[in-house]
Amino acid sequence: MTHYSIMMPFAPRRPEQLLPFAALTQWSEASCLWQGQGNVGDTHVSFSYAAASGFRVPVGTSVNLMPFLHPYDAALRAQTLAVATGHRVVAGFGPGGASLQRGTLGAPYRSQLGAVREYVTIVRSLLETGRVNHQGEFFSCGMELGTFPRPAIEIGLGVLRPRMAELAGEVADVAITWLTPASYLRDTVVPALRRGAERAGRPMPRVVAIVPMALRTPDRDPVDLALNSNSGHMRLPHYIDMLSRSGIDVDMADDPRASGRALVEGGAFLYGDQEELTQGIKEFSAAGADEVAFNLAGVCVTYGAKTTLRELETILGNVAR
Image (cartoon, rainbow, N blue to C red; front, side, top):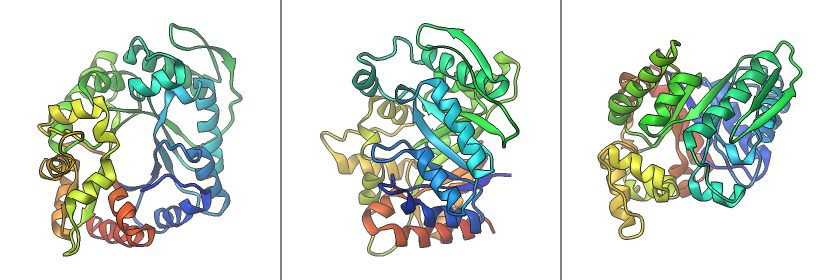
């Protein structure tokens, strides 16, 4: 059975801005509230604020960028969040792009996969045993973390390309995709996850697909919505490469509108009436997604939070029938 979730459509500047979306998660068919990495507020603080305000729901981070958090701090924050919410937490991580690594660390990781493997090894050991003694090339930690009864914490990895998917199959509990068409999920991501899991002799991670979308109305331009939702990601080399592998060519420097149109036509951005949108969402389920998170960032940027909340409620109600 596929679960359906809500992706925060913007990074809250003030934690109370998250509350209406936490309330919708609590009162609707949504199974989880997701929030991405921002540069105006801390994800863990916003989620904890919502829990303290009475909206205690399962939450997921998609994804916290490794250069910003030492793995010990990442484990501590995930554990604190699980206690604050009283629910399962998906602690999602990713290395970020080379430019971000250069800006925070002085140079990119020599090996993206090696850095991710070490990071997850430390976080998992701390969360599962309360201690770790790891001296690595990228991360080192010889510390203890207090352990006590708490809700489950799943370790997630942001996955775009086959090699990271294989690593997620080996070491993660959850594989988190972003902007990946259903066909690419089915043909590339899921087989790579399965290969990694079989190599490690463990179950395949569950798959969470975060999918940008919008309902069709007469006054809307799907290209504008797609660009308002994803233009930043469409400029990053690892997203450009993933989209190219899926048959979607984007070139934001030369032709942004053609790039946005390619997202819509290639199924990376879902746009249609209620029936068409429900069918598109179910294609992700058929492709192997255990959970689909609805990302209405384009609607929010263009029309505001109130319209976004109404649209999320409509989409959730239709797809859950």
